[in-house]
Length: 131
Figure 1 (cartoon, rainbow, N blue to C red):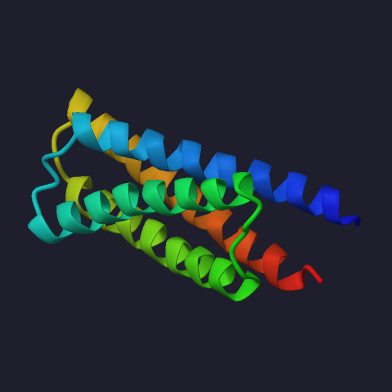
Figure 2: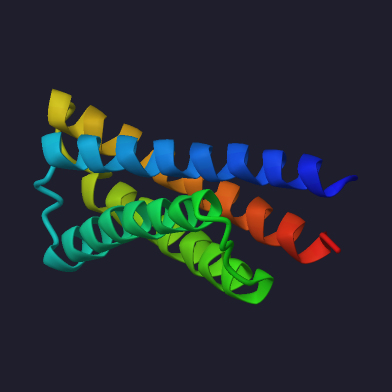
């Protein structure tokens, strides 16, 4: 794989990560009552923080100053952990509530968060395997 193919693939993955993080934050706005303050703090910090981190990575690529591979792997592993943990805690908070529109949005938010965590995990693995 050439260097240009690697950059294109990574930009697509980072763009998907950003899109899922923004979608999670928007759904979090519409289903904020997570019944547990720690779940709300974790989800809000994860979604907002990783929007800032991924935009920073894009800014570095645009300025032709990409981040080091080890830092990228660190952010990807941490993102994987935080997004999966947020999704699991959100599902746990809404598991036994009545079926309402807010509950449905919260469960969609949790599912997207777990999918984004898996995407961050794949990003970490592919970045690690890249030469």
